[in-house]
Image (cartoon, rainbow, N blue to C red):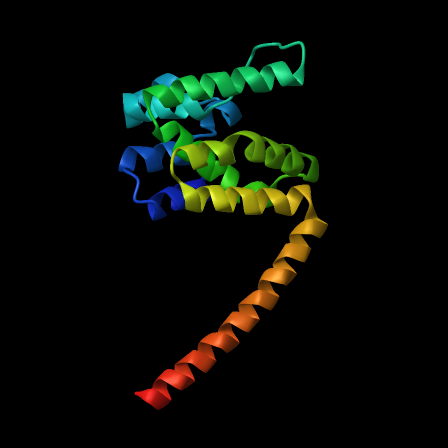
Length: 173
């Protein structure tokens, strides 16, 4: 939650969004009631936290049914308050490294299928790119390493070209 809140602070989000980011796992992971969140932090914060929280205490026949229902719930909450998706996107961006490998892959697949395209549709290109980068790292580590190597090679050549251009400009000036 702190990592998510820091991302949202970097994005210049409002106070309620940052508070909701800090609290976004509380309904799922603690016994804290929605009434306490509403009383202590306000109705807006509660609306956002509930929108990000997964559905609990409902028995689904398959894991896919549960995922689909959670996504539907989150998208409906997003319609009421766009800050729900900001927290969800930030949560997917930088918290993968602390999860077990099977969760890393599952979350990365979900991110590439749903959240990166959603960030793209919302015009959040920097977030989309980071979501794709981090997801690829877990979905195809070998491919990711090859791409990183190629980028490093091109970057090195680019720095040489820039140094040459600077040198020629300095001589002419």
